[in-house]
Length: 418
Ligand code: HAM
Image (tube, rainbow, N blue to C red; front, side, top):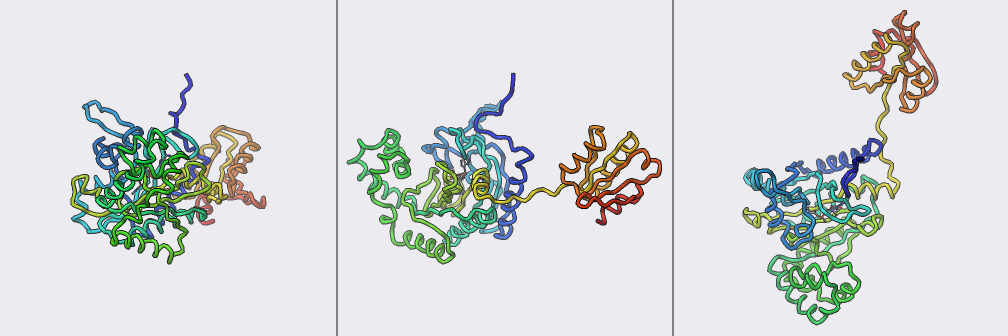
């Protein structure tokens, strides 16, 4: 039997890992600049957290969760998203008492049983950020700026911010009544999926990709026109600030997001380089979530972005991910004693953070030289029969071929200094 990875998962091979390292480093650099702290939560949670937090009528909870009973009979779910777990941790650890505002970020694998396609996996890695404890409109903007900074540093400049407000829970309920009233007269033209959603989650009909659905909803009443002055003003302050900061945004009445915890501002980062899965990231406010999970009414806002998608877009834009530094020196050893010296010296050098390598295959001089070249080493240190006798090796600089004899005792000190 030949084993294959499960559908929708991927191996990240050594040749690609530098891209991941770069993006992850960039995220933590930007997070530090924005004064966010990292938080890590378990890979799985009690299933109930997601049914309650994400919403029973969402695609995530309805069809995409990896849920299982453990041997104790508890229903657990591999986390499909990061916000509900972070809020659970926030509550469970009494973080509100520590400080009124928390700015948190995470990089974690998420699991969704989706139909795999370009940019869509069953296991993907998300970078997410959340601000808990403030309902200032500046927090919405701050998160958009944080995401933008990460994208820019990864060479991604050509994305659009789509933004909308879906109001507060009661405002949304009123709007949904208006929307349903409008849809009622066109119900026969809607797709089967949207007919179902009419009953369960009518707001989501707005973001259906079906052509007929879109025709119907094109002239549907718009939520922004139905928000009370206060919510509308809040939204205007967000977009005014974005305008001031030169963010390329577009108000999109269809942006209602696929998770139930949102309120007021919703936003997505859209890249044309992604094809049909065009969301580089997305998020919004969730002022009711913490209460929903058993806490006090504490406001929050956040977003998340798939790292796979960041890398796809960065590559499409020919971003030059930094190459890892090659080993400084390759020890070429031509007999058993030489191999022992080479091995010991590499171990010593590594203690001093000087990256070094030695042959592991007892190869010929020529093929060890070839290997050193392939690895792009700056130097080789050659040890043959003669060198063992004299306790001196030949240090050769690869760029110009210049060489000198260096005593075994001195080679480590010399390479540390260079
Ligand atoms: P989401 O829109 O479901 O939001 O996911 C956020 C991002 O994760 C997407 O924009 C996309 O880049 C990436 N993503 C999602 N599913 C997949 C997949 N199957 N394969 C590859 N990438 C994927 C959330 O998860 C919210 N928790 C975001 C948030 C944080 N809202 C407030 N705070």
